[in-house]
Length: 328
View 1 (tube, rainbow, N blue to C red):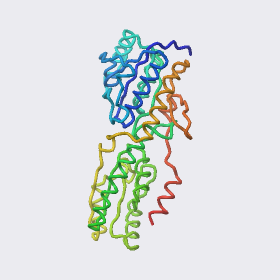
View 2: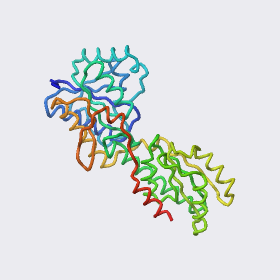
View 3: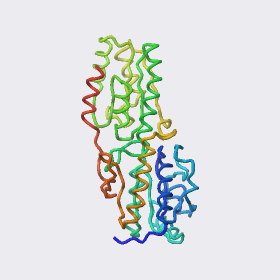
View 4: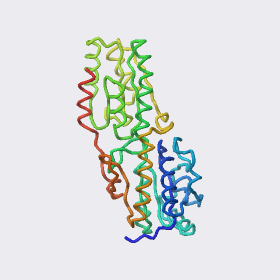
């Protein structure tokens, strides 16, 4: 595919994630390095439909590498799901002289970019930005490492209270339908049990595990729950169930919520964002489109967008085994 790239548009879409600003910075400065114009598209696909554009140069992205969230904002766009909405978006890009798009986001954002490419032949490259780490074709998504560190720090603080009062805490973390945050943060914070969507633990095993913990001399326990866990009960329902069956436990619930998405990105996320942003622009310059840039075995790789959208990520089974051993 031959692409003559003179101006690239960059947008962030879906949920925000630490590292998105670092990726925007890398895209803008890589464009400048290669003498290509760059346009920031505000509020994702909705901003594309409404023509919410701003020209960006190297100095316009000063001092953002350390900031969480996204300076380009993000928004869900129902209008972009319609053919009429996408037609408006395409007309605005043509009017602005934009030749290609870099989309920073997750599965839904990539699906929109893929559809846009199929309809208009418009070059698109994706950068995976989501704390859930649930995108096929990369070992790490932007924001995942920062979210992990945030969760571990919070659980450490909760453990202080749990130990002081001999309490059992159910701590619910984000991750949608993937247990990556729960599994890794649970091991990192020394949780007694970790409930994830990929493994159906069952209520009986949970009770059995808690009884064993109690019998082994543990006076407090931490159970980390992924929000999409297959037991099928939310953290408050689990609290009621355990209290009914194990009245000796004083049970509390903490829903960590959106604090996991915020904050200054970790060094790992800043470096990853920089590497992915540079590769995204240079992939377009090389004449390639419809790819996602990702990291596998510390190498930047290209995965067809369609595979990134349709593929399923897997949790590390070895980590599950490790968790079972070290939580004894």
